[in-house]
Length: 584
Image (tube, rainbow, N blue to C red; front, side):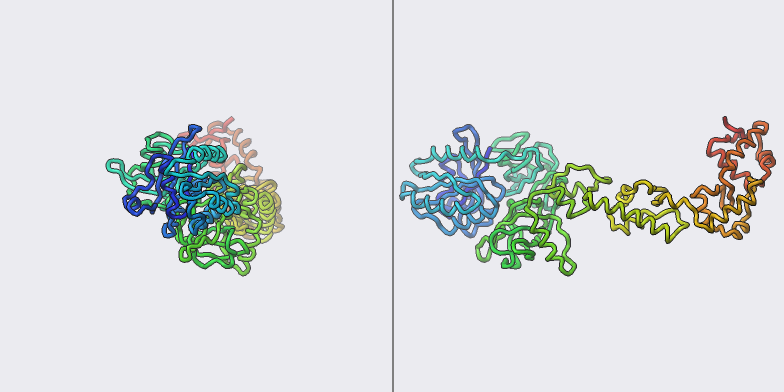
């Protein structure tokens, strides 16, 4: 299926032409038929000579209903521009063409209607001249008469040729179905319609409502008037939603693939049309089927920041248009450059941001995004429309390679500085390092740790911290001198204090492997464990605590925690009667 939107001045025969091509009535409402003009969007379809189907989105031509027209044109990939031979180029012809140009529509066809009432060539030449200067460029033109049928075969053939030139849709891409109608069917519930521009929909799929973020499930699908279990882009589709009240979504909302779109209220854009500095402070942004008031803040000659009245699911590279509804004027087309832009709070931030935006073209660029954001979650980039094909540095985090190297160097500097300022602490706390490096997640600190740095007990330490400060090293040497010949005797608390070994100093010595801590204020030289096992192995097995204490020539204060440590290490095993044996 191919989807084509009509465009043109009011009463130039758009709906009549669609009716002649399809045999269907695109004007859905009795009021439209009574007044002889399209007020809202109409839909019809027909099989072309090639066997393919063209679905027409018939839009209103009256200037009062331009928002309705834009809701139909926005999601459509191609346009059929209609100009009456007896009236020629008219004001709404120009505004519709300006809208197509602003939206970047580059595939189109010109139909000059009422060829039975006037020579079509002057109107055709005038229209083609106007169209040539837009994104549509040189278009094929066909003169037709819906009344006599003249030119209709040629128009159908031209539609076939137009369809053959359309780019292949991203059928495996995420779904973003802009809603252009919503209604209730008795016995079925809420139904919405729209143009599926990418992806595929299946019965049973879970989707998100763009307006609220809530989950909805597809109960049924219909395209071209027939029920189906699956629809692939590009297609006109009606979606029956299970258990969703109609008032939950209206025109301008969207059905989304879960987790694939960033709902944003602030975007940076490039403007093509009126100079950015001359834009009014308030305009209406038209994208998809949505029309949202926005506040405009010019940044550069052709760039601006838009603050939306409500969030929309936008991607980098989206095309939209700005319109001044009071003046019935298309101010310009916009290309979305950034859907998650930084705040502009510091002096000079706006100018610096304009410089950044000057180098962006609206194409999703992973390397560029990483360079600008430095650190960003992969899921966030995907929701912006940026494809991710590199491995995270930690968790879901991606990093600019140069910035990541700088962070690694800064981490080593911060660890060394902390070691100088706090020589008795066992390294720098991970949370403190996270704050110093201004990182958003602790896992990034842990991922930055590389030899000779080590991660121990929530702290980052370097090999150099194993060297004890001079006062502590001297105290350890004194203990070795005094207790080396009686290794299972532990200095009393007051002796430790005399040597200058408080809790922090003892902790540093233990971490450096210079002392072995059995309990609070009970320390031995570290090599005594192997000696103790040899002594205990020489006792009759099993042995008691009392026997061990005598063999080791120590006190109960030392013997109890020493044996418990040997139990934990598997060197000894405690029996039910509290006796022990040496294992192995």
